[in-house]
Length: 256
Length: 256
DNA sequence: TAGTGGTCTAGACCACCAT
DNA sequence: TGGTGGTCTAGACCACTAT
Image (cartoon, rainbow over all chains, first blue to last red; front, side):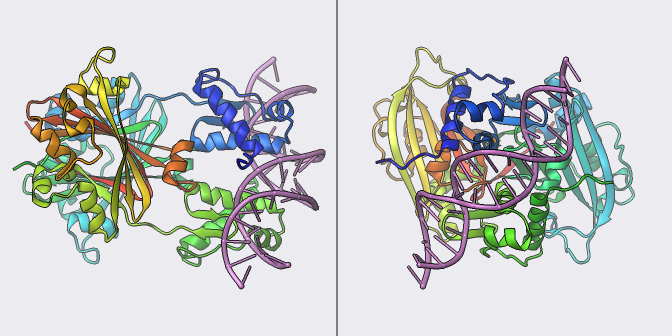
């Protein structure tokens, strides 16, 4: 005989089915935990456990005092290599983030919350080909919002030799064309990028800072900008809410 | 006065601190739920809740009957555009997956578990520029293992016009050089790829199939292969355990 | 057999939200 | 004020692992 399926899982499966079948569409409220418990003749904790299973899958979100709601698919902000296109930057004067958010009819905001000079973390030093003991970098922390909702954090590391004496090292306001225009003035025109992508659950700090619901992972992207002379001149670590952001890369395949 | 922090969260924080400080290193066993409950003077359910918070963060894994263990960082299998390199394929005869796994001293295995002919899903049809009502595709499902542990699933869709009459449409065993060598024989040499990356929590099916622990998301990669004439000839959806897989892309930036 | 995590009960009180 | 989710208690029994 088949192993018994726990009541909480059966209830979860039933609700999952209702969501998949569209009986509970995006935004719909689930029956309250107490109602679920009563109708299914289980303790409230058991019904609650079922809801938690769905929440951990990212299917529903609980709102204290209001109820549990079905999450709908959200339109993703899509970022790819084109966001670093020199042409795009020169034509629009818009940062790639602003362009993508505007495209979706939302309001973009970017805050530079801190600029410091530090010793580079190990993995940053490696990618910038710096000596972690003697070289320093400028660390710029940026928060990205869409309609005042935080969607990404980016921490950029710039070798001191590159940033020294420019607004890169001192000012939150970078002026027209933003970051990469300033790099170009310093002799570094972006030619190639490397992006190392992984995904993980957010840390408690990230959950707070980005207001991340249960059951939503983050994309962790380590970006390296490389100039016309094959020199890496900038590393940025992006942490993105995975329910609001995606990546869209187009690239040639090495031939010959 | 500051809002009170629930006991379960305080306990979780304490354990998180012990893990971060290295007092509980990778592989270490946490005190049992009953011991935690007694030493912290809370009910077992409360201690259990604390452990669950850590589990949902991906910091620990519970093993029924044995205990709760600290998860260590695992070495990622890294995949990027180079895996589609024609040169690599021609030089080694190895599939890119096998090459990466071998590099890490692990044993690779790939199983093709099904080959069917179907109407393409909407998003596949769009990327292959097919008519979803009249065109059909060959669907090949592949499971990827490292040391007999499942790490990825890939579902490849190939237009019938491309696959017709070749082993692509019929045989799990593709022969030397594997998939892309066969495409080339059919006149499609891979020139560019597009990869659309997102992350999410796994479905219950994926949890079962890939044996995914709690607190581990998946990378969901929609890959499109494009040939020398700018024709898309293949779409693959990869679902990868995010604790074992990463992506590593290097690409030029559009200039001028 | 003893110890572990997994599930469940039947309560209780608190914090948040709408009316 | 009444309904919602959030937290907690003090038990109970089951399923799995080790010895």
